Image (cartoon, rainbow, N blue to C red):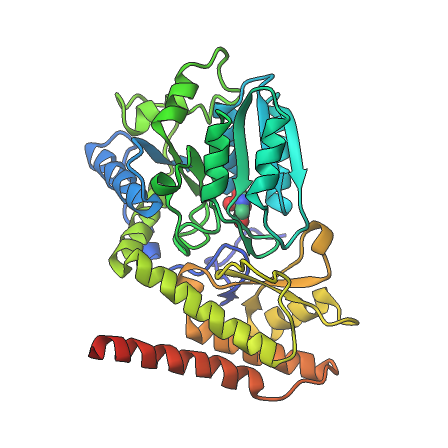
Length: 403
Ligand SMILES: *Cc1c(COP(=O)(O)O)cnc(C)c1O
């Protein structure tokens, strides 16, 4: 094969999966700025600004807030590996694929793991977690996923945080999918550690994992008897580079941090509450359209606005539907994971991808595909229902501003 290749080209896609999502061109433009040294004072100032904006997005005053190099999974390891020491009692509440991943990591960190499971698509009643904590001698950490991307369910957090603290444990959440798309109130909910990812509702490319640790969690890290298993993800070392004496730890992914900076700026400029309302509006339109086609969503209550799980009508092939969406319409969505493989479609409307244009195109394309595969659906009803939601939202906005 000749390696005389032309300039790189990629197909044009509409990203409506669980991430990565589409990116505002301003983010890509920021990423094309010249590379600076990782200790250049100008770059250090950009890091300071990213930290300040991350605190605003996490709605926290936590000093130890930064973007770990690596995707959301790196943040998962950074939080778990720094808070857990071998022999620590850890409770993980699992209601989907990512809760299971937390369990695997907690075990690798040597935790004495208590694992609770609930049906995928539902959420935990706090009482179940409270009862499980009573069976543990000295629980150190309780961990749960806020927005379970594999099922489309949003876990209420506050009461579980209270129970964890009552039992003397730290409380950790995965907010990879929720941050920037629905309220994540780290301080108000009293969350001790949280991690996210840049490529979901924050709207920049994959590669960074925002994390935040409460002063109490920082104390626990400081008082470790053993160093964390991972040198690369040792928060004590990383914190020195991000906020301490700026000692070299690893070369920061400079241009990814530019992109994150611009994405955070755009999010705060839009306003978090306006941004959450936008995600909700597009979710309501999508659900109205999907239900008008006679389809049902997998998560019955506590639905995520940014990740919608649609049950596949019996007899239809998941891979075929998704293949047609991609090849004929350029739309990327995802299928089910684990127990839900082949049973659901996962449609993300996150960050920059969360807009009426994407929602209406997706509904039209899905209707066309299902009808041509022989599913009996009322033609035109999906778009009409989604459009109705948008029209009403516009009316209520103008009502409000007219007062
Ligand atoms: C995407 C996701 C992750 C993993 O993030 P990566 O960026 O793929 O490493 C973890 N948790 C949840 C809930 C996610 O949606």
